[in-house]
Length: 73
Image (tube, rainbow, N blue to C red):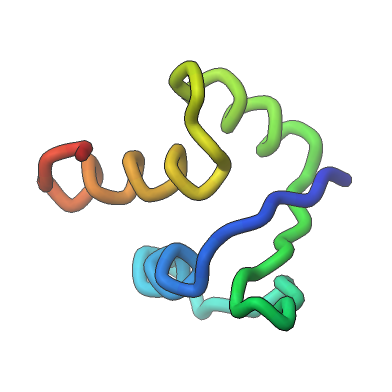
């Protein structure tokens, strides 16, 4: 199992985009960010769509914006 770090805004966006009821598995950090466990295969897929220089947070928000029909960034 891998861990990724995302901002509070990204964590909330993930919750909003979930089709099934959202079950929080993340741990909120003192700085307000979240550490979120990912299954290895999900982490591998995230790496496949990551652009050079993007953080986990950047990659996930870009995908969410695309899904919502918004400009990637």
